[in-house]
Length: 554
Image 1 (tube, rainbow, N blue to C red):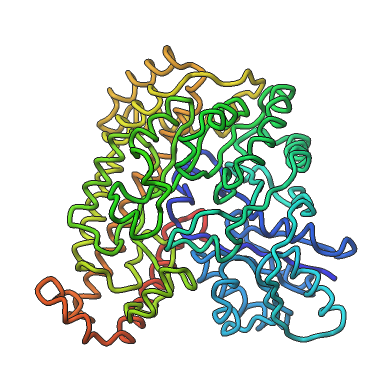
Image 2 (image 1 turned 90 degrees about the horizontal axis):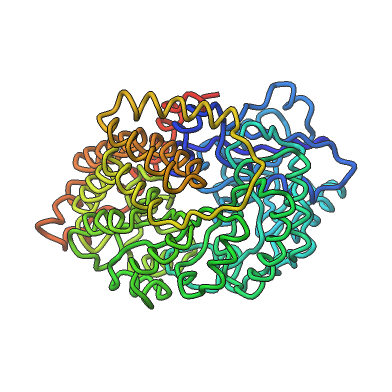
């Protein structure tokens, strides 16, 4: 069997870092880990081609060559995902789909014409699909309520990728999260009992990347790396001597819950193992909103004190923030902005709340009659897909203003410097040199921030101060400033997209905007009309986002 594995176009977003990638001469942030893991699960006698369309589009020859097309996708990739299904069907190919998006929204893939839906976790459902295909079954939906033992998951097929195209490679240690945040779909996809690989497995994966010559970032893409604290510590204790013996060839990143601040040993192990950055879902400094959305783990200690503790230990924080929770009080955007400046967090991934299908939030809003029918997405340029408890215009205006000010170059450089100044300066001794991509990015930074932008004086004195005080942190500091270039550009897109939707909404659904004066007007709103508007607007925005990103416009 000749199988073409496709990863759809990723519209410009927080995670795309498109402007920064363009400056560095790279094509994509991360590879499709799920898709290359699927490649490892397929029969060994199949011929495989993996095409990440964010790096380079597949050719007509690829379509002619394949017997079956396998497409994986996340929600944000919905537009290109559906287009690829329709193209495969039109060309007479068998089309199979899987991944988080079709698992949560199987009806979308069916409507687009997919023949096979390989849902849930591939270790259980890929064998079902292969057996059905061998038996000549024309169509099928393959599901499994069983959560697979990830200690049997094979090493992903990194050899099928163009490694030079990426900023970071990805590995996975665990699946699942013990918490039950109302808006999150992770527990629906992977369960509340974290399942982990063995330390030996993980070291084999690191060794594989090392032998392939990889020397940049490695992102451990668990949704909560410390969901199983005991096993996380076991892995870290095994990883530390491996990293020391290999002279710290990678800079490691992961995601963890904020209760990391409660475990001094775990923080120290992360730093000693070579982790330099951790993404944490802080969501909001408003305790009432955290309680309301069941994010109780963020209410046990002071949020600012917890962030400072993690930073001082030597870990750069990336954070997620959300606006639009029920009973959120006016001024939420400004409170989030003040929190970000107080903690010095450089990268604040900031979104309007979306109700993802089958989450606890989605079910509650459905029962309350507040869903608008639009597809919840992580696109920062999309309005909420439900009726909030305060006017949607007020929330969106606050969000636009906060988003814009957070990524003002002056504010960004000031807090990034404070963040790195606070960090412990220890890093493991490394033989890793400066890559051509890093030199290229540094050259663009010198020109943009050191010459052209009004922050030029701040750029130079901060650069000298970090170089003198924290020399081992200098490469990470420059990388953070490089990421800032993406956000300086992206905030223009977000503002234009949201303001355009507000204008369209004012013309199509004036009753919604009249909610400032009369909240009861929402109850009489034609929700199907709003749902149609929402779906059309999101599709338009995705097409626009692709069009304005030249390196994605393949």
